[in-house]
Structure formats: structure tokens, C-alpha cells
Length: 264
Image 1 (tube, one colour):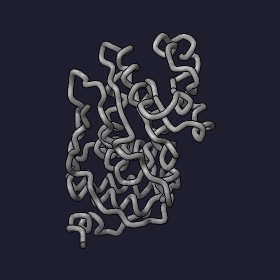
Image 2 (image 1 turned 180 degrees about the horizontal axis):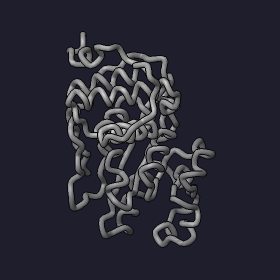
Image 3 (image 1 turned 45 degrees about the vertical axis):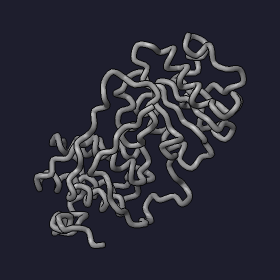
């Protein structure tokens, strides 16, 4: 059993902002999360995942998630599930999460895994095991959450580049001044995000958008909001135009402020 290694550049102290914070909600700890990359042996990967997630509880405590409920009838890998376990799709699971302590998530897309990750925050879930079809769908989630890797793949996970201190301070400012709970949907919040990334690029800070998402997930952002932040960061870096208001949402010297070491 191995864990995805930690990488530098993601740390940073956040203020207790009134924007998007939910008291009492916390992520699952690393020892509660596992991941299985099947390689060529999907049957063995399924067996390993089931064994880990059911090591201490009866089948009735387990819910198995699939992309569609039809997979439980047509998929060979899902026909041998233990009697008594729940069988749901990623779409229907949110209506019955309170009935199960353990979750085996089979072949989620990146979007489905992001939504599940946020849905489980603060829930009474003992274990989550994610069985991926390919490493790409779970790569950033694995970097951010560092699950136990139960089935070694043939290649190491590709890590995003570390973020420089100025970019980290910009992300801290964004986190403390926008409503992350609703994915900064308000125009004024979006203006702050867009302007912040423009300032970074113009200032020569060419961040890795994947690293932006990882940092956000590790610093209190819901995974779906962190993905939206990654998308905006990527579009700004690529030069895509975003409609924003004429007024500047940050102080004129904000980039200079981000260059200053944080005061203890």
C-alpha cells in the first residue's frame, strides 16, 4: 500500500472568511480514503477495493456507485457484489447517503468525483474507495487528497508544478474575498478571480492551472468550485477574454502586496 507523495507549494494560511465557509464541515482524512487503478486486471482491482472498504463493517453498510444504475445489470464486474449492499448511481446517491457508512465509487468521471468529494464532506462516512478506469480521471483528486493506493499502477502519478509564493498569496486573497460555496457565480466575485489571474500572468507568474485546483481543494474549496477556478485560470493563461466590469476589484498595488512576505 502506498500514498501519493506530498509536494511543496500548496500550503498557506487562510483567514476565517465569511464567504463560503461552513462550520463543522471537514474533509475525510487520508486513512479513510483509498484508490485503485486497475491496469489490465479489473476483476482483481474490484476485489481489492471491496476487501478494503468492507474490512470492518457488514455489507449492509456499503453502497456501490456506478455511472448508471444499468451497470449493475449489464456489467460483469458488478454482478458479484455482496448481498445486502446498496447500489446507486452517482446522480441518485445524494438522496440516500445517510444509510451507508462506506462507499465504493466505480469509474467516476472527474466531474462526478468532484461532486462526490464535496457531497461527502462532513458526512458520517467511514471509508471511501475510488476505483478508476483510467488515471486521468482521478489524477488531481489523488494529488489533493493523497489516498491510500491499493493497487500499484505501472506508472507514477504526474504531479502538477509547485506554485510560487506570489501565486499562493493571490489564491489566499481570492479565497478570502469571494464566495467559494456558490463557485463565485456573482459577477463581482468573478471579476476578482479574472483580474487576479490576469495580474499574475502580466507579472510573469505563469502558474500551472492543475496546481491551482489542487491548492484550492487542500485549502477549503469544494472540489467543483476548485475545478471552476482551474478552468478560469487556464483560460486566462491561454489568453481567452472574459467579460468583466470596468472598475478594478483589487487595490492598484495588490500585485506588489502579494510580493510581500506574509506577516506572522
